[in-house]
Image (cartoon, rainbow, N blue to C red; front, top):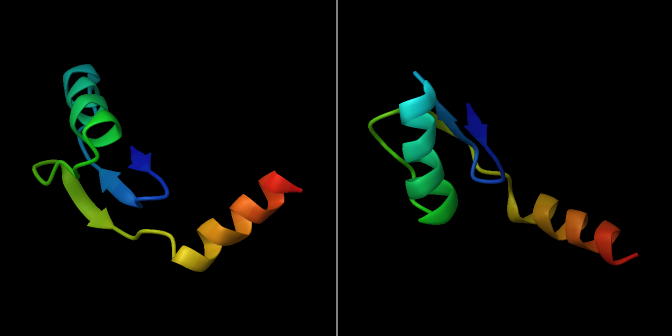
Length: 56
């Protein structure tokens, strides 16, 4: 499982782990280190570019 724009890659995303990832990462905005094996957040410039497209 991967969460972007945070770029957090998770392993062992079974239903129980997925619920924890939803609670702690998606809602709580905290990477769950126990299951994360890599993080590669998008650069700020990519986020700005996406916002510009949405506004247009």
